[in-house]
Amino acid sequence: MNFKEYGNLNNKTIILLHGGGLSWWNYKEEAERMQDRYHIILPILDGHAGSDKNFTSIEDNAQEIIDFINDNYNGHIGLLGGLSLGGQVLLEILSKKSDICDYAIIESALAVPMETTYKMIRPVFSMSYGLIAKKWFSKMQFNSLKIKKSLFEDYYRDTCEIKKEDMINFMEANSKYEIKSALEDTKAKTLIVVGDREKSIMKKSAHIIHKKIKESRIEIIPNYSHGEFSINNPTQYIKYIEELVADSNT
Image 1 (spheres, rainbow, N blue to C red):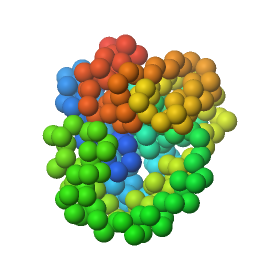
Image 2: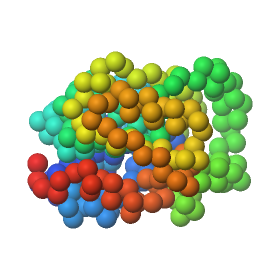
Image 3: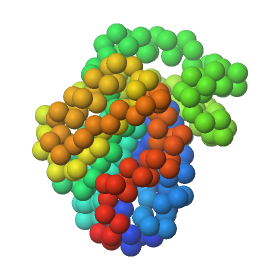
């Protein structure tokens, strides 16, 4: 797994995990704005543009990040955050290592398996994958995600680099992921966020996660669709981080 890093190594460490089909730039603005106060690490999940290996599973990605934290930070950091697929990787990390971080922000993580969607992913993407390189198609997909327009070139460049099998694999993994019973043992103080314009299954997932994690609170953010919050509103996202994390060195 490859990583982008910002800030001073001596400051409190924050790791933020991007959504499926995106890359480290999901949190670029947050990292740039917080680098004077925190050490920010932005992993590139397997199978995505800039990664060093193919995507195998959410569980494998989680273990890679745990190993990275064990090897470099004595097994513990200040905060972990994640969006969508990255949020699922975060859930898996919290399940595997209960004391890995003090705080966590889980954004729009699916916790209810979608069997019908899972069955459709491979045939649909096998037929439509070739369209990804077409700029008109990519713009249509990009606009449906409601990401700010300044990120289109990053999105287009990086989606074109994702191999078909990787894209199918991480989308299938996203659609069938189930949270583990060990999640309830996490010691992280956790904020769960979801947009009020997201599908009902995403709001249901947020409530399931909230019920599972004892030290958690849930916030349904008005006027946001799936994935918009951390990408389009870094100011508010940073505010949420600062509310969770004490501004002192680890």
